[in-house]
Structures are given as structure tokens and as C-alpha cells.
Image (cartoon, rainbow, N blue to C red; front, side, top):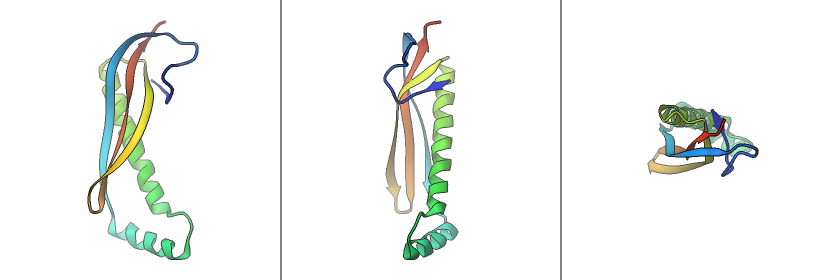
Length: 105
């Protein structure tokens, strides 16, 4: 599966547009990680616990989007975008979406 943020793939022709595909996950805060993050916030620097949590959430969402595209027999997903939104205090959704396409051989 080819994944790009571009609206096309240089050198490849789009044979068919299959439609929107998306993947998402909702993650809640973890009290242990919040304590460590709070300590890091005092001394400054990267809050690695949150970085790891977001990286994991992105990978889960991408995997779900790819699975949806594979059900459509897509060759690629174009114009991939990410967005997040707070669902409730301490929980957020990470959404990834794009356009599934079939490529000419």
C-alpha cells in the first residue's frame, strides 16, 4: 500500500478513485504517565510519555485506515491528513483519513 500526503503520485496514473478511508483511535490519559509528565513539565524538555502515546495512537489509526482501504482493493491512499479532538477531559481521538485509489499498471 502506497501512502502519501500528496494529491497524486508522481509518475503514476490514478485509474479509479475508490473514496474516503479513515482510521481512528480514542486514547485516555494514564495516571502513571501523567505523574511522570507532570514532573518533566516542571524541569522542561520533551514529555516522552505523551510522545510515545501519540506515536502509538498514530500507528493504530494508520493501520485501521489501511485495513479499510484494503477492503476496497486499493493500491494507494492519497492526501492523507491527521486530526485530533478532545472527546472528554483526559481523552482524545486521533483520526487519519485519505482517498483510496486504484493505480494504472
